[in-house]
Amino acid sequence: MSVLKKILYFSIIFLFSKFSYADDGIDSTIDKWLSPISDFVVGKVFYSISIAGADIKLIVLWLIAGSIFCTFYFNFINLKMFTHALDLVRGRYDKPDSKGEVSHFQALSTAISGTVGLGNIAGVAVAVTVGGPGATFWMILAGFLGMSLKFCECTLGVKYRVINDDGTVSGGPMHYLSKGLAEKGHASLGKILAVFFSICCIGGALGGGNMFQANQSFQQFVSVTGGDGSFFADKGWLFGLIISVILGFVIIGGIKSIAKVTSRLVPLMAIIYLAAGIIIILLNITGVPEAIIRIITEAFSPSAAAGGALGALIIGFQRAAFSNEAGLGSAPIAHSAVKSDKPVTEGIVSVLEPFIDTIVICTITALVIVITGMYDDRGDLTGIGLTSAAFATTISWFPIILAIAAILFAFSTMIAWSYYGLKSWTYLFGNSKFSENLFKIIFCIFIIIGSSVSLGSVLNLSDSMIFLMSVANLVGVYFLASVVRSEVNNYLSDLAKGKIKRTDNN
Image (cartoon, rainbow, N blue to C red; front, side, top):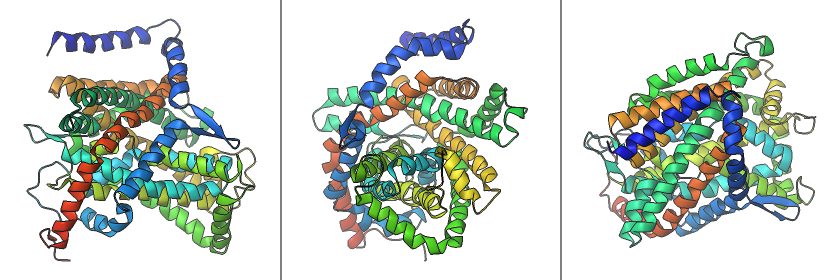
């Protein structure tokens, strides 16, 4: 290990110990140090312009532009290959001897675990509250477009991945930026963007993918165990310690261990949540046509909230971008570990991610809020409180289940982001056991911090870093889109000629 790496490692440990024993407490000390930086970065990253009375963030326009480009450039592959994606996930084209670590289903589950979370429960409620029911229509459309962008970035993730000597896989934007842009004659730019992406991903993993999730899951846990009178009410550190130990056992085994957990946890969570939502919709089935009509008409109606129809569009698109993470570059890291010799296959599988996350789960949430009448009678309710109240109108005890689901959603998100952060970390500092274990220890420590303190500046800066990932990632997508199109054309040709055969008997 180089002297520079040793200095960096021990500097991190020193700073952590310094903050831990600061007189003002860790949260106020870090807040004081980071506030000026956080305010500056947040202001730039989430810079908004006002259009017809509605504010739209430029970073969201960047993501939506990428989604639209990929949808047309790849000739609506999100529609054309949807059924083939289902066949791939079901293992109907699997080859046991393919290089990689996990199956198509496990890779998809891991990626979904990073996107399906509190945003599907609380974020959708906020979008409907601010943008009106019409925001749901635009949220669905943005999710549909995001499927094509996800296809492109995940195909690149597999194509340019690195198979390590021990058989483990390292993939993601940092690899296709450095290797792919080098092929295009832009090696220096690719290297700079890869390092920039990795730094942002590590920051996002420790903040939004860790501390925020730990903090929110702790709040939900306290709410279902007695509120302020709960034994854990003032013991966030203890809750964080328990979660960090459990998560430590999951992530210590790498992507195979992570995939085993997420492939069981994610479907279970989704089934419970969707089943409850479908039950409520069926019990209020007579109100569904009116709700759908309302969603469509208010999507184009000048009377829609927050700036009219344009406001509904902007809010719906923003919610979808925040929810499914298409274009951020996080998902390709998980999808890169798939067992496949054809990069396009995992790109095709990845179209299911925005579909499940945004088009299915987010839409169910929005429909429940509208058809139960809670949107009109919400009062001061918003976020997870509004979603919980909507479910409770039909299933009185569901808020407890919802709170448990929120905790599990947060936990699964932490699992996925621990892997994203680790792969970015090892790209920068090498994939030695010491390097990997150091990051895992740091990640688990940050769970305890996130559960114990309020770190507004850290979380704001982390959110900015997550969306800054898209700046580097989409540059790679635009430069390398022609490579993906060549890959998909060859794959479709081989599929049509029968060179690629199903390996099952179904």
